[in-house]
Amino acid sequence: MRLRFNKSKGSTLIEVMVSVVIFTIISIPLSMTVLSSITNNKKGENEQSAVVAAQQIIELVRANNNNTSLTSINIKTDTTHNLNFAPMTSPDVGYLATDVDVGNGFKANVSVKRKLSYETVSAINYDLSILMDPYSIEVTGTDNANNNTGDKTYSLTGDLKICNNPNNTIELMDSANNVLGTYKPKDSLIDNIKINYSSSYGPHNIYLENNAINSLSVYIFKNDNKNENKFINSKGAVILHDDLLSEPIVDDSTNGVYDINVEIYKEENSNKVKVYSTETSISIGT
Image 1: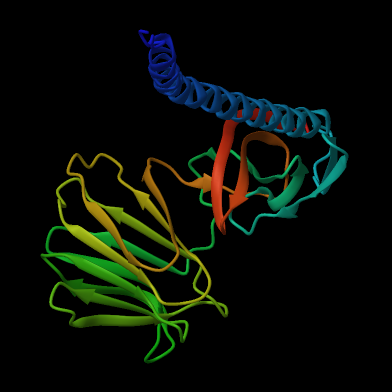
Image 2: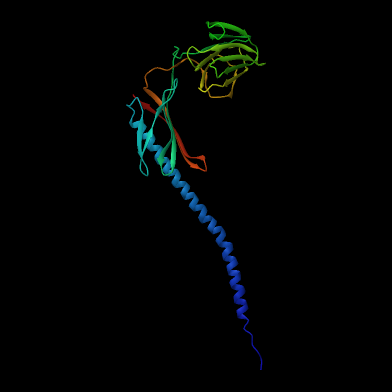
């Protein structure tokens, strides 16, 4: 009597194992594609929500264009959110709303800053004025040593360092850190410095160092100078107004054209992740 063996059982097991392997090979990239699609869809939803919030902010600020004192606006996203604005500090004219909740897990930084008009008449109260010549500088300000206000001339052929100290004095130094002169402000803080230089001056480095808590604004009037001097902010908060041809006017009126900048971000692991930002111009009070 002959024994017969069913060989089909062994073949079926191998086929099943091969099928499992093939399915695994196919399913892994397919799963990654699905996950990537979900991530991209979520990112798109976030960007769309951020765009909606930013557009609401801009339109509501524009709708208040007759309001020369912008204080707050309300936007509606997942619920109603109030954005409170604080006025910018002089000489800038504008409003700021920082780290405000705009819904759907987003926060926003909003700046509404007026474009300064430039005329030929000075309207800024400079604490210190420096005229740069090829072999010297002429300084107008209040001397710290004798409390006299007037013009002084210092020999200088190289680089210049301007240092704003915590004790509210300004030191002018040459490239070897030799102090040329020490000046104090007309009031309690040094806010504004004006620098002019002649057409024959430059190029040189001018180092700006601010060791005080308040920001320091430096206005650079190049006139017809073709030599590009390099201004280096070596330390502290320095606001540089460069390439000016005439004096900026800062008056009491808040009417005018404003640049509005909106940045929408999410906080992830103590980091700010920007989702969307936009900038445009609007008119307020006109």
